[in-house]
Image (cartoon, rainbow, N blue to C red; front, top):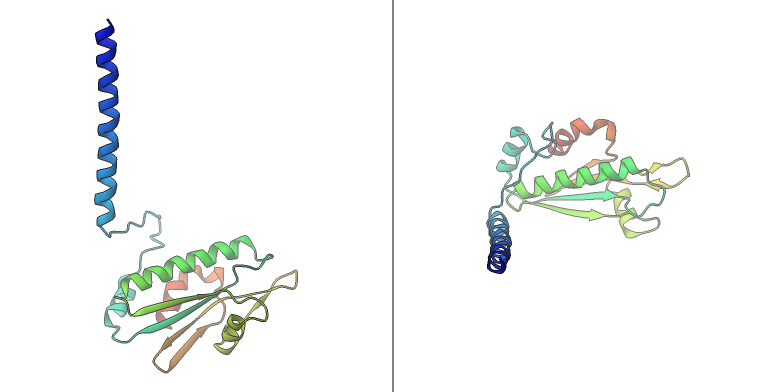
Length: 167
């Protein structure tokens, strides 16, 4: 009886150790594969074929300055969530651009260099009901050409990829 419980305990320990080793091996192998999977119903984080074609034709560096008020206390949650979605989409652009798209994220606080830069580049603040100004826009620069998206409205979420690609 004692031998049987010892044997069962030993097999249990070996089984747990084997499962742990298998999980570590799967995690290591998955870390080597640089494949991303978009499981959203609308494939919200997958770039369209047209955008990928535009990115393949790029031969000069593109600078994107993304202005999002992250430190604003009164910024509504839906705008913060949308700013994160825009940031994620810009990450997809950067990953698919073969290193030609450089993204600079700026938080334009009041009376800061980032706020001055936003105004100079055509990114406009939006006034909240509490009187606070928030920024959610971007500037796209290619050589000597600049295109500003003054405010990225959540109502145009479905057209966000189009707006960025057009710029």
